Length: 404
Ligand SMILES: *Cc1c(COP(=O)(O)O)cnc(C)c1O
Image 1 (cartoon, rainbow, N blue to C red):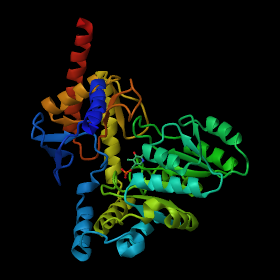
Image 2 (cartoon, rainbow, N blue to C red):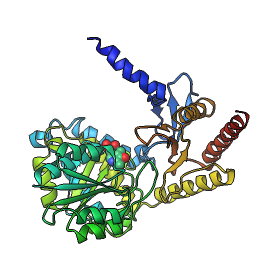
Image 3 (cartoon, helix red, strand yellow):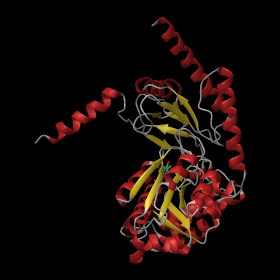
Image 4 (cartoon, rainbow, N blue to C red):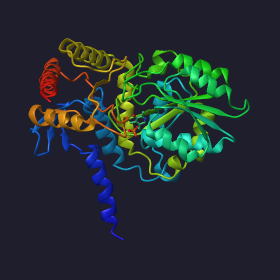
């Protein structure tokens, strides 16, 4: 059997469609974010990153770096084991308290990533609650989909952000079945935001528990960075809030927050929690410092909002289309995988602007896009440059269309 030939056949098909993924090799420059050194031949030495999920630049914040360094110097590098066998460090417990407080919950539980937290929590809830049914928003993240699949529980998909469809689907289920409504607050590909109050209303009406992924909202929304559930005053009505430490908090790891019984249940039964080495204590310490900082500091959030609004206004002024949404994410639709890749390549090569093309299967075919995430550390001049570059490329595309 020629396994490599089998691998290459499928990779070839991806390349043919324009959906083959190419990673940019960067070296993040601490203190100069969003600037990074590029190690690619077809890019300038220094590039500006426009697609980072380190939304607020907390990955280079002095307070966060110092917390990580201090913890390395006091605890060393790794955790030394699973949480069960010698891996539970004081920093993990302190971080869980910080997270519970962030969401106004009694308890929280850490995981090695947001992906793992969704996968582990949903697969445990779905498999351990007898006759559970999981009602999943049609655009939920892969980590939730995989968790639900692994649980083997009955799954019902409801129309994206449509509480009426959710209501109909809940009503069709047996009254006594445990029901879990799984959804996100900010959907990162379109940047749209869920109608949380209506969804909670419908779930409560049917006695369903609510499972909310706030990965793209924690740190960014709410007066303390507790996400959209905090901003909307709904956190106490959400059964389980899931988040990441890897995006706005600038570190790594994932978590759930909820009641002590819920967290204890997942802690006791989730294989994805039990059988894997705990996060390095230094990562936990840094994440805690980042969360604590963003609980009180509004500067980062305010400046991010300003830069997002500024970029949108400038795109409008030049007639460059972008998907309207109430979040910090600016998707610019290209609608073709090859063109999308090509535009990203030109931006990188000629302008040192790094924006990753978003292609299938991350988004449906025909909806390919460039996705910009302006942050507090992008300067006005950075925004001017990126809009100027897009304007030039847009006009070239328009001319190419006219000639063809
Ligand atoms: C990135 C992401 C995750 C996974 O979080 P990680 O910490 O990166 O593993 C979960 N849900 C959504 C919606 C995400 O975008």
